[in-house]
Length: 338
Image 1: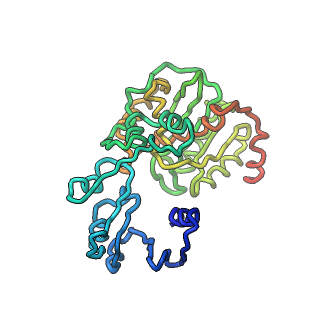
Image 2 (image 1 turned 45 degrees about the vertical axis):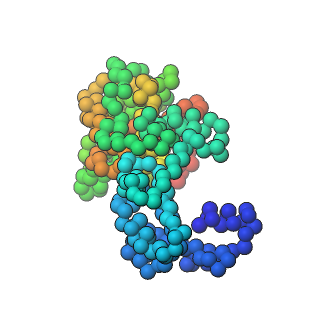
Image 3 (image 1 turned 120 degrees about the vertical axis):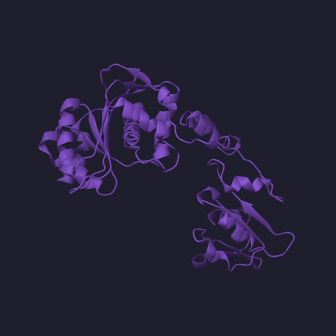
């Protein structure tokens, strides 16, 4: 609706707008905007044409069939389906039907994007994911979007400017999903995954584990924790602990979904720029990577999430510029938590 209004405004074309009904009237012609979450609610419409945006979000073609049935008998009646690639779904199957014409527009061909945008974005995607998102290719990922063979494996590497990111999944009374804590650093243009702790914990046990791990990692290692839901309360609790008084504890809000958060470091892994230090955690981590998919069908991706969080912190504070470790940076947070 916003795009339609902007086009009309730019063209100085007169129209009337009724926000509550999501309706625009142009020369007595009505343009309706309706949600497709409940396709059956659209059956009462009579239309001269229709458009479905983000068709990949609909699991089947019910919405298309219902809208097609709403068309008048006019020979000029048309329907438009717009979608970005996500494997071969129902919208791609329409191409084989009579009267259907497919127009493919690659993101990489968009002339309105700023210089260097596509090149920068491509560097943040694995090759297969870039083919889907930028080149409009139909890619069937299945499992294994992150190939374990991409990682270089090394003996222990001394740490510099490291962060331990904790992806918490706990309950005060009972254990919930898996918690993971990834220790990562950025050195000589490479991401080093030094260690990952992984397990199910009740919060009192997890708090003890975080304290013990911090003592091993050392006070020059930042403790970062995902800020989501009740986890803010855990962060405030940890900041009050005298055992962690000399540690920088940072709340980090995740950017995007699980897949988009993993892509930046996974793309670097494909180029050989992610090093995994040997440890008992390697096999579970590699297995998780091998089963990781671009949808929500994977049961456990906690270790991947913890690496994504660590990379997000490093990208903001280390890769983008040097970080000075000082408690003054976190005085405000400590006062708010007190």
